[in-house]
Amino acid sequence: MPTQGEATKRQLLKEQREAQILDAAARVFARKGYQRATTKEIASEAGVAEGTIYNYFDSKRDLLIAMASRLALDSLHELNSLPPREDVKAYVLALVTNRFDLLLKNIDLVRALMPEVLVDDDLRQAYMDEVLSPAVSYLGEYIDDRIQAGGFRKVKTDVVARTMIGAVMSFGFLWLQERSEVDERSHEELVSEVAGLFLDGLRVRPVEENDRES
Image 1 (cartoon, rainbow, N blue to C red):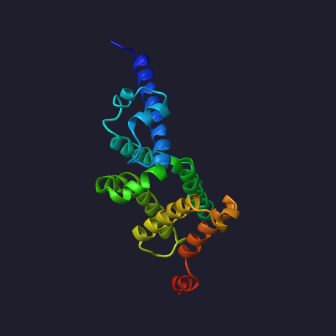
Image 2 (cartoon, one colour):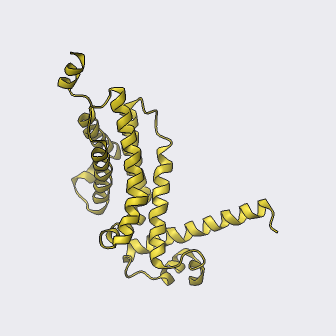
Image 3 (cartoon, one colour):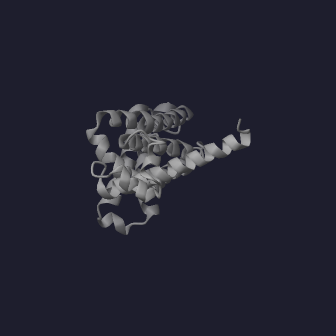
């Protein structure tokens, strides 16, 4: 029987090979589109035999679903390193920066995934369950926490969280897809404007502060 060290090494090699294949698939899908891409091209891009792909994934579609799952895991993992929740401005700025950085880091994956999400019901549901819903829940919990602390006004947290996540991802995706005057602005300027829009909309309004004090 293999030792624990050997099993750990095998698992690490398996994860590295899966990541290698998924990275290659993302690049090929982004260049050619999901429908036109072939597993042979993906294997060539990854530097492996075509049959190797099927040792890890059952089909080309499974590759796409695995890409969505990896995006979800990366997304939630990154959120653990944000500033303390009590520093609202720093936290929201870091959150928006994080979402933009995540998009930039995974732009090939996003370009490949989003067109298929729009036309594939099962894939869209998987994207909702594995990528969107966890992010919405995380942000909703934060907004609820800040409402209870008196920093944010009372809002429908599920609506606001979904709007914020959707706005950042959609804006970022369009920003990277089509050149416009936005390209002339720095990354920091874009983050500041988007974060400011959220913060000004969520902060307690003066009339609401008076109501609390009366």
